[in-house]
Image (cartoon, rainbow, N blue to C red; front, side):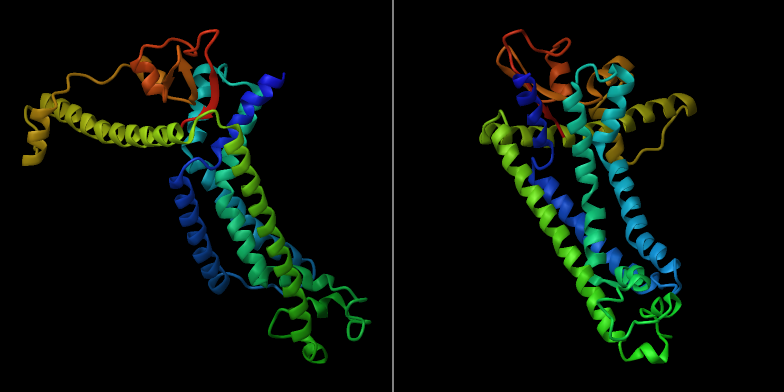
Length: 319
């Protein structure tokens, strides 16, 4: 049991393994900040009505965050690798803890944009002020909220605040924004602490040395880049051959003619080969030699998990 837990804890390295991930997360966060600013200026209008204020304020924070979260899951390659793994292999190569932590990795990366949206919304305070205005604490504001109806206090965030409450409007909004910003800073602290703990856990649990992990990162990047570039050329050359067979000729530019002449393609790759290189990959060693990806494993003609009884199997997902 202890060895199983230790092995699957290594999956925590999914979260922050590469600089590219951090840069991408930073760009996502900046884009979210810009979108939030635009939303606040163009689309946010508090209804100034009891019961509606609360629902609208929550929706203004929660619905865009939910949409950003779902978009993040959709755009994450691990999501579709997981789907392919379930469909082709029924996750037989992944233990339950590893699968759970994989879902955590997907959710963690998808959470960058929604967390940023929520933090900026709380720091700005408009949505929180709108949502909380109808629930003002009469004890806190006893000097001017006694005997006031919810219909009146719900109009504090709006321009048509009742005249008898107008003198207290600035103080009420100031206090509500203080509460909102306080929650925002708390959320920032919780997220930063979580990231720090996960980074520490990653470095403690990673079975790879710093140099080997750096090399693995370089390999994954190079393999992905070369694979995509080669797949694009292969698809174009194969399509050119099929079009020529149908029409008797194919209209190619000079560069495309040189490409077709240099890279002859007879047929597409068979489906079993595509299935072998598609899906999740758990970093493994076979007889002491590392297997850095499914493509690497396929090229080495390794069958099954690729591990002997005495070899190590390391639960680290390849990006």
